[in-house]
Amino acid sequence: MSNSLICARCRKACKDPYKEPCEAIETLTKLYAELRTEEKTGITRNLRMELAVVDYEVAEDIKELGERIIKAMPELNIIRDYEVKIGYVRSYEAKRDKGKQINADCRKVNGTYTAYLPFDFIVTFYEPNIYYMTENQKKILMLHELKHIGIGDKGLKIEEHDIEDFKTIMERFGLEWNDFGQDAPDILKGENYGEKPKGKRKKKQGLGT
Image (cartoon, rainbow, N blue to C red; front, top):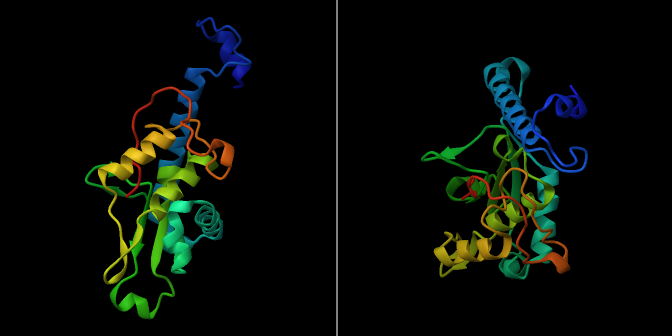
């Protein structure tokens, strides 16, 4: 059914349903997308053996995004100066930690894995959790994860985000920058760098780790 037919049957009198976004249609679209994602994830999980479906894969598009963010963001100079090697992965499995949705994470390659993996860190994007995100939201998510990479007395390490870091992210991009349907600034465009997005206040999502 098209939007025009839905609007014709709707009792709510919108000023101009063809120009203004309809909250009802947006909600239905989001619900449908969530159900489809859950359905596809379930099918993949149950039939992965027969279909030879992988749960994780090397993601060249995520790698390209990471490299663009590293090149553009001044606060990531450690990665550039120390030539930190980063692998980028897409997961088709959702991730939660203590009930909180995890959109992405950054992990240091340690121990015996260093003998097999040519990377210092692995950044993973969890596709079932971020299917709704715009490209601009994914740019901010990538910046958030790359800011975990730091260096200490013993070399490279994972920097845990402290209160000040979270405050900086919120001040620059707004509290709901990663919500469904939320406008977000393009952090790769200088004129928009640091602007807060404009949009309706929505339920808070997980930032990642």
